[in-house]
Length: 315
Ligand SMILES: NCc1[nH]cc(CCC(=O)O)c1CC(=O)O
Image 1 (tube, helix red, strand yellow):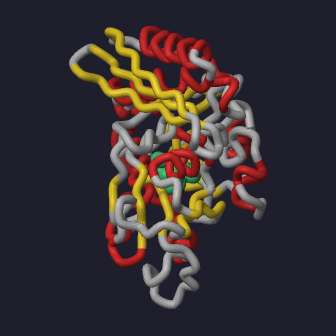
Image 2: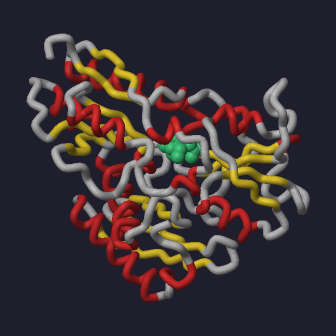
């Protein structure tokens, strides 16, 4: 591996910017050069709605194969796209500090959730966002869309010059918009009290082979790890794991560390947004084991409150 660190990435603009930032930092910490290796994933190839394709990890499987087949040495994922089950032979060696966790409304004419008129067409491909949108504003017409960030922004009337603009707004992750330099399209950062983000939203995961032994690489990844972020996303993902929920399930989870207390909030929604179970639980958490236990405990509370009856958990 004298050529340096081969960093696997999807080809989308978001993946490329995220991966380049990570590759530069890891290369600096490890004092080794890097090269990007583009990997095509099933999620980039299929055209249907994401909620139609279903299953976990459409964006991730090809990157994991590339790691296992030694076509690359590290892979950068959006943590919220990473299946909760670990891949044999691989390890998440680093979770860098998280970006903004919130969902962002990008609307025409500076409109917000409060000022969008009844009947306004709001696009999202996420059942979690759709359900919480319907709950916050039952009069909205929620439209299932997919495509990369710029394709989605282009569907908002008047937002991108020359683009069709058949929608009044779309909802996207603030983190992705920031990383792409598209922050100006945001008309409202949606308060997590109104829309709880997906588990792991705004965070990245850097995966490598368990057997990775190039001097400096594992150390660099460990140095790039951010413990408060790792604890938070560990608790959030434990909720999904315990609910046996797929990536398309209408579930939100957000953990925040205050001192050594981890406060975890999770929501399970019915698809129509009419029923919703939202619970909070806190515990001291200074390691990943305690963080995971908090998530498992909250998931049990959600199930006891009837979560499995209102939502298609493993859809
Ligand atoms: N599922 C697609 C995806 N995966 C990660 C992000 C955004 C960046 C992040 O959450 O870290 C997005 C786009 C979006 O939800 O708007």
